[in-house]
Image (tube, rainbow, N blue to C red; front, side, top):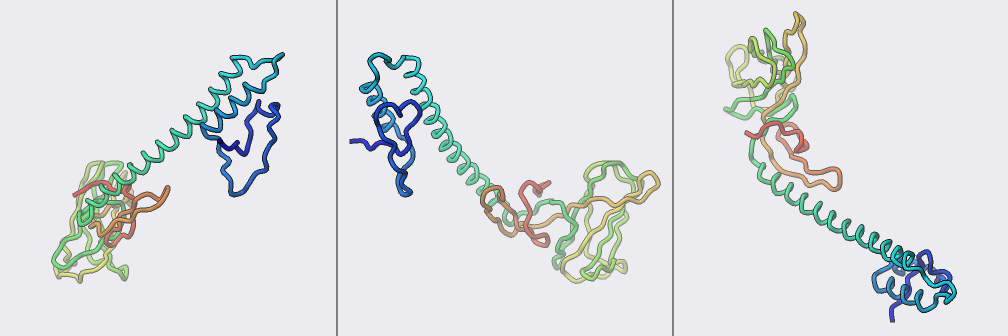
Length: 226
């Protein structure tokens, strides 16, 4: 025999069915079996002088169908969200070992390699320059890039200082500035860095890429895949 639910819905109080005490460990959800059992009890115990109108009967069925549909939709959305996250994780894993262009002003110069990046100009400039600074904050090289149009402008540093000597491998910071309307203005920079690993966050944290020299960044911050 089906067990009555812990909470009786509206319209069932007049059937002589007592409201049971709520149990902390019990199930408070109204399932299909319990719902139909209550509907049969309602029909059997209705007042002969005031029979249940068909409109009211259909309204109760419609309410249950709506709740049941919402629960099914929630389960479907949960499954879809899980599949989407798995797909995102799979895509992110393919980036490990790849180079990406991401917003930032620091990167790691490796032995015998160059350091690459870009700056994004809102307006064209007659003179764009990029300063390269070491970990102590000392300027080791300034790249004079000349006139540049608005948009993304790439640059590359060969790892040599102003005297033409190779500098040690390590972390370096870049600073871009442009002359716009006869005024020197700082410009945002992006750096080319390598993805070392991927971190799967929970909830709104999403998926993070662990970038050499920059730390963790969101996948949404990736501007270009190289």
